[in-house]
Image 1 (cartoon, rainbow, N blue to C red):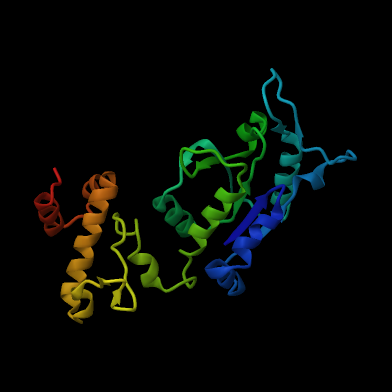
Image 2: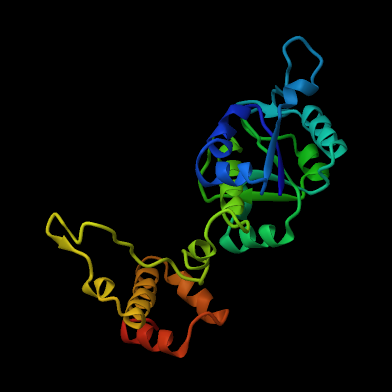
Length: 246
């Protein structure tokens, strides 16, 4: 899978191309990341990519032309995939959307805005989708772009063990159950005995119930979604009702 990223700060993407799971997946040839600085598309001595907003107001706005020329060059290099930008008014990024991107396995262009935003004329003519990580503001689109790529790459076949992604949070429609490792007793707190029993059926039941409990306590909205999408069993519903779900 190929990502082309339009950014004023390409060095930020070292965190995903040189570290951890995503770096190993890149070495295996599962994905690629190419960064493009729109300053390279400018001709003035200052390499200007932003200007004051018409109508007044604070801050600067990224100009349409350097961004458009950059995307045109990306197109010429072979990436014909969707163009995604990042803003608080975008569609919230979800596990479902990430998995759909993996299934589509197409190239993607990520445009990382800075300053007060991007000239609307570029957004309306070049951008196919605007994505948001949540209801908060960041300094630019680089961190959301890294988050999207990390979420997608770890789902690519061969990036990590299949079971690691099939039973994690959101994959089943619920949040993941708590995890424990050695030692068995830490600062007086013991690992739940069922996890030490070796009884796989009991462990599986405990894990499912803890997943239901954690989701019900912290994200009850996900319970409703999982129920409506058929991801809850009769046993799940019985347990939830016995524990306060209505």
